[in-house]
Image (cartoon, rainbow, N blue to C red):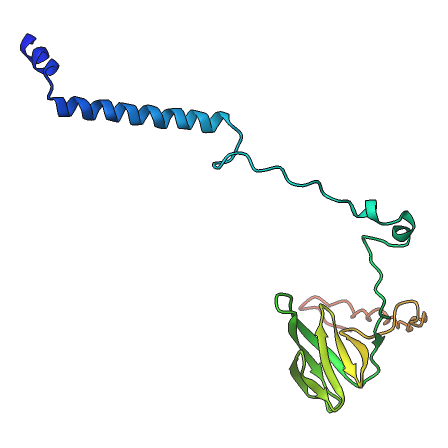
Length: 184
């Protein structure tokens, strides 16, 4: 046993240098890991301070912002009129990524066709935009909206109810006579 310990102490110089170098690298990696865990900065250090942000309210007068609603901004364009064309919107396919889409529209002759944004539906009428339940048409420069359900609202609908007919109860059949009994 003494011989093994003695041989171990006489390790070759190259092996001793490699072991020392390995322990040094392990110590550096451990110190770096502890430093990263303790320090809240990113891998490149702390970012430079950013310039202070200017507030929009600091430069604008209070009266300029009083008439605006940030949640429901009012556009300057008037809303599109409901289309009076003899067309029926059957379905829509909205493509929000490219601001394009298509719509299935029944033309006055009763045929249903698929039209993409920019297609001419009938002479002088072009499909401009496709929304969830409506499409916007350009009719000679005027914009019109065609809805899937263009029926009047419930307030404009007549309030009369159709008469409901109640059928009389069914007639009862005569009681059955037992088999073998004869009528006299």
